[in-house]
Each structure stands twice: as C-alpha cells, then as structure tokens.
Image 1 (cartoon, rainbow, N blue to C red):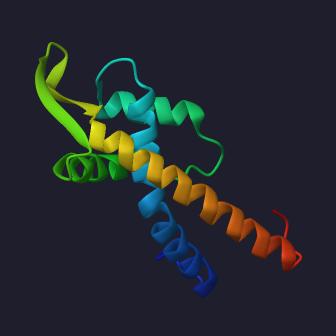
Image 2: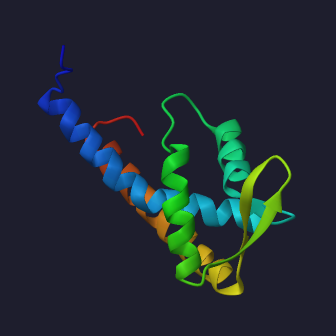
Amino acid sequence: MAVTVTEDEGHLRKFQKELNAGIVALVLLATLAEAREPLYGYQIAKQLQQDEVENAVMKQGTLYPVLRSLSASGLLDSYVEPSVSGPPRRYYTITAAGRAVLGQWKDAWVTTRDFVNTILKDKGQPS
C-alpha cells in the first residue's frame, strides 16, 4: 500500500528542507568552533543528537554533504586518519575564515529570527 502525502505535508516538507539548508551549515560551524579537538562526522552527529529536541531538524546523512561543502569553501580543514574499529575517519576543524563567517552568520541568524518572530507575533501567532 502506497503512503499518500497530503498537499499540506508536502508544503511543510519543502519548507523544512529549504529552512534546514542554511541552518545545518550554521550549526556545524558553531559545533566545530566550540570543539576542543578535531571531530569526525559521526562524533558531530552524536553530539548534535544529544542536543536535539523532538522532531529533529537534522538527519545524520545530511551532515556529510554540508561538511564537504564547508571544507571545499575553506571554512573547515579536514584530514583522514585510519581507524582501528572500521573505515578511515575524516576529522574536521574550523578555520580562521570559518570563524569569521560563523560570526557573520550568527548575526544574520539573530536578525532573521527576530524579524520573523516580530512578524509572527504581530500576526497573532505564538513566537
């Protein structure tokens, strides 16, 4: 039996996907900026999972393409190390450029969040 997605569910999924695109990059930079040592993808996913609330925004599989993109953009450095318990692991650290961009993105996030909350509140929606 096929699962039917209502039109409203489809709109919500599309909205959530678009919203998550930038948020994942922001959260990854922030997580790596706070890290005391290089982290590999699974460690990052587990750390974020601990901070999750119900209805998680990020899935583990979505982290890896964003990590690669941030690394390709020069915002993260990475290196591979062999692992005794499985395949080699790619470790990530934030670069100086990544820290600068993180500061800009935090400011943009706060401005955007405040704007949206103001609009929603003005329209009688809970903030």
